[in-house]
Amino acid sequence: MRILTAMDRHSYSRNIIPDVSRLAANTWADLTLLGVQQNKSEPDPQLVETMLAYQDELLSHVNREETIYAPVSGTDLKECGKGCWQATSRGRKRLTICLRSGDALKSILAQAEEEESDLIVLGCTRGFDCEWENELGLPQRVAKEAGCSVLVIKEQKKANQISSFLDQTNVSQQSLELINQLVTLHDAGLKIVGLKGQKGLIGKEDVEKKMMELLKYYNERKISAWIKMVDMENLEDYVVSATREGIVALWVGKKSLLSKIFSRDLVGKLVSRSQSSILILR
Amino acid sequence: MNEKRTLSILILDDEPIVSKRLKPSLEKRGYVVETFTESLEALKRIKERNFDIVITDLKMEGVDGMEFLTEVKKRSPETEVIVITGFATMETAKESFKKGVFDFLSKPFKLGEITEIIEKAEEKILSR
Image (cartoon, rainbow over all chains, first blue to last red; front, side, top):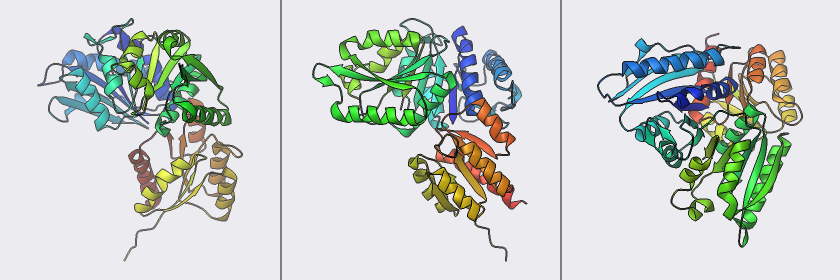
């Protein structure tokens, strides 16, 4: 598993370190810490210092029981393309610190694509605006445009349950596996949420069948899972209340009917309205 | 003239999609691959012959992956075991390494990731 953590200099980035640490310690994932800077000619010394401090804090959590990662040194940073510097340590698993210059959205997406990340994690300000590196709505755009799953953490919180919204049958194996890891990490129950429109269940019989298949899949693996139906018109309020209880996960695919209903900015809207963490699954 | 040894791999995962994805790719790389979705069947097979590399899931009905890897290492300590799991915890990782696994990989993973681990295991096996 490969996790890309995008971090800026604000406190919300530091606040996600405990969550990222637990995820890394559980999964022994290859981990990249990515910072974005404006200077294109050399690594920004202040950002390097921040990233190294984040690394130290992360390692103090992750390596507490077992030494999974070796630390990266600032002097190891080597140019790996125009306006891009990277250093990797090879402990039992790979730890990379990467700095990219330029547009934050493009930098995060490019890094995720290059290293074939399974998950992008980033924090942001609370409230509807979701700022990252002083850019409004950046997490929403990452969640919308990334080719892999994205976890946006607004507030660190123990998740008692994960509410996953299903409106389509196109559920990838990777997304199921990611849900499994998060359920295990938080020791949480899994709520599979179906959406009801005026004409009944959205996605009709196929979705109902998929929901039952998922329920069976999780029950066979002894994961506490159940089904809940929600009226489409109450969806946004429901998302807000679900994020109070834990993580909201949303399967986003080309066939997602939800995407059509909220065509312009479903993902962005849900990221904005969530109060703690939202996971976009692909 | 030295001929390159062909390594044998056993894959055990109760989700058929895992073997379906891995088998053709590994065979293309020259490995001899046998796949199982039932741990009891796989257990029967390792009693019949040793494999160079075993890739096993942990959470399975019947004999779970931890018991399976214990049995593999007991019968054939030279076999390199790679654990793949969708329900990873620090405890399972620690226990796996204590039992002598070669590496621990959480799902989801890309083909490239597991291939890299298999190549490292192969290097170790061929250097003996």
